Amino acid sequence: MIELPIALGGLIVGFVVGLTGVGGGALMTPMLVLIFGIQPLAAVSSDVVAAVIMKPIGGGVHLRHGTVKLGLVKWLMVGSLPCAFAGVVLLKSTGHGEALQMHIKLGLGYALLLASAGILLRPLLARRRLQVASDVNVPVKILPTILIGAFGGLIVGMTSVGSGSLMIVLLLLLYPQYSLSDLVGTDLVQAIPLVCSAALGHLLLGDFKLALTGSILIGAVPGVYLGARLSTRAPDGILRPVLVIALASSALKLIGVSNSALPIAIPIIAVLAFAMAIPDLRRALALRKSLGS
Image: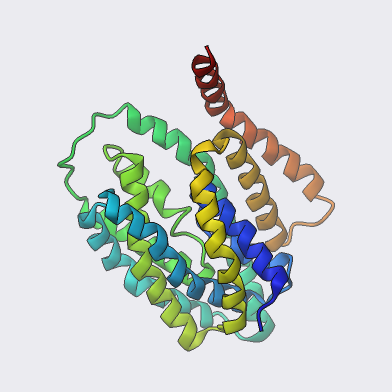
């Protein structure tokens, strides 16, 4: 049975994903656990299976536009396909019952902290890319690329977080010569087989809930479409710090930080997030003034 509150949550998350390009797992899974009270394993399993349908939407757009480096996709898959399935196996080996659910919550919390750092670093790395001479014949760094795929696959298999929020940052570090759109397209396309491998693991070993996945998709599919349509008008310098605050706050809650400590930690995170966004905000204001004059 479709649950309308979860579908509405999926709509909001899908809209934010389409608007900002942040990976859906970093938003959807903590929402299911913290707001809707879904058991962590069921949340991860159902979100990963939903991603099998969601990922080809963005990947197909980039393939049509030619903004995918298939040579990178191939080597990323070498690492990600086995490790995504292995992540599910490793997850199941950590315990049973409440112990397993607690391990997933902790893993998800730490993955969200990494994702928050990745969202902060991504604009800085994109600006660094502009200072590097572009070269269409960039050689593939095979071993580091495989390792990025393996790392991303393992984290996605265990937490559903990583393909859109962690791997893109590592690719920006490794291949500063490529345009951001090429790396985003490459990341989206390699994520399709990655989430298929992780989804197979969760269907066999996890706690997949068809009604939960259906509820997510009913909201998320139109949400992603609407967000993508409006993405060029989005105030990126404001949205990204807000996302960092939301993700980091969720992470702290998941890893067990006390309620008394959260009012201290969250303002510190907010100040840091907005301070790092100041250069982007200044550029956006300067651009708006130049267009208005």
